[in-house]
Figure (spheres, rainbow, N blue to C red):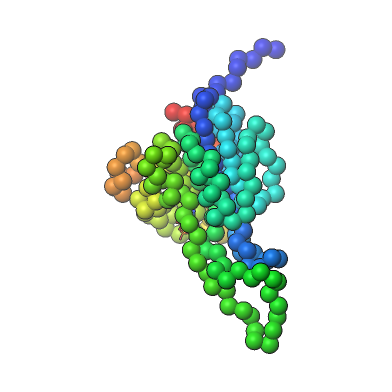
Length: 228
Ligand code: CTP
Ligand code: CA
C-alpha cells in the first residue's frame, strides 16, 4: 500500500529539550529528588523527531528508553544539566520540561553521613542556577523560540504569567500538578499554553486551555504549534 509521506515540518530545525528530575547529592549514597517521571519531555522529543527535527534531549535520571533518532544526554544535577544545555546550543527551539531541583546541598559530604549522638546533621541548601532563565537571557545564542513549563498546585495561570515575565521565555506550558488530578508522574496532563509575542507585558499574554490529554497528545499538539 502506498501511503503519502508523513509531513515533516521541522526538517532542518534544531530542537533542544530538557526532561526529568535532577538529583542533588547529599553524600555519596543519598540525594534530593522530586516526582518527575520525564514522560512529558521524552514525548516531546519523540514528537519533534517525528516532525523531522534534529533533537537533543538533556535528561535527568529517569527510567525511560532513549526515543529513536534522538541524541540523549543523561545528567544528574542541575549544574550538569545547565552545562550540557549550554554546550548543545545553538538551537532553533528550546523546551525546558525538566523539573530542576531548586536547591542543592551546600555542604555535600565526601563520605556517607553517619548517625551520631548529636542527631541529624543539618543540611545547608543553596539555590541552583535557573537554566530556563539563563538561556532566555542570552544575547547571541538565545534560541528564537524558548518554551518553559510551570508546574503549579494552585493559582496556575497567575503564577505561570509571572514566570513568563520573570524568566523572559516566549511560551509557558502551565501544568496543573495538584494532587486532585492524580500524582505527578502519571500518563495524562492538564495544560494551558501561555504565549506572548514580543513585549513582556503580562496583560498581553494569551492563554489557551487544552482538554485533559495523554502526554503524547500534549507533545503532538505542542509540536504542531511550534511548526506553525
Ligand atoms: N527551571 C530551570 N532551572 C531551574 C528551575 C526551573 O530551567 N533551576 C525551569 C523548568 O524546567 C521550567 C520552568 O523553569 O521550565 C519553571 O519551573 P518551576 O519549578 O515551575 O519554576 P521556578 O522558577 O523554579 O519557581 P517555583 O518552583 O518556586 O514555582
Ligand atoms: Ca522550581
